[in-house]
Image (cartoon, rainbow, N blue to C red; front, side, top):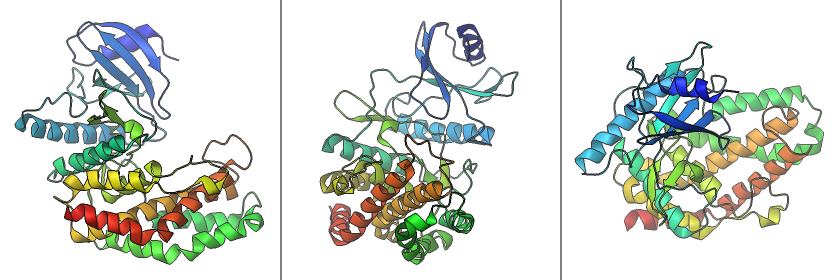
Length: 363
């Protein structure tokens, strides 16, 4: 879509004091167009931001600039390398954290952090523990960040909004599928009040809004060769929400013993060792700033997130598969059932999981 000369010209709009020698397309991302740039001095990541997904890219980029500068100041005070512990965002020669091309597209340029690797799954307990430490430390370093943040994804993790979508979906029955999934509709409805009771803590601010990452999948952590985390990346979704969403989303994606679309729900279970490792890592820093209500709702946040994802898969199936990409007609239904099994397993093992949380907080 973009030739190398065009990409090089865009990169030269940023103040990097370097010459670009080579450009490669990076197809790993699902939202933004990402390119790997070799420079004579250093390497870079150039991105075209997706204006369909993010309506306020200026706000998003200012969010990223603000939180990374705050983290860098903390790293410098700790005699740590500020270019290793977080991403480095370059400004344009006009002193902006983004460039707008002639087509109105937004671009950003980051420093590539050398000698790092990413993981697509949590394959051992050290990875789980260190990702937990990194999440908690990232939140802790930003716990005193007071500048406003743009809401780049309105309604994100807001179950009141999700229930509005749910009600509309049930009312419309667009694909005439409700009759075949009555049992799943019941599972969603039977937990509605419990989920709204968790949400009340967000409304009354007993669970406060803090700086949260909002996409803590394992591939958003850069590791060194010894599985230590170097940096938490992909800050497009940084907003001021509950930090419990970061914990809950990590638990949802890390502890599942099967794939998100595993058709055999007997294979879906909770890996208690990974839960323990991530939680212990997270609370190493989390216990320094979380309040009692937040700690009491750590497990609830995982249940909340898994429930939300179950609902979203089922809504999409009932609506005729408009949102999530599918590989076969029943794909969203399979996802729904697999996610529901994970939800039920978390619920059935509540006491065991809470014991792990409270032991980690007391150590």
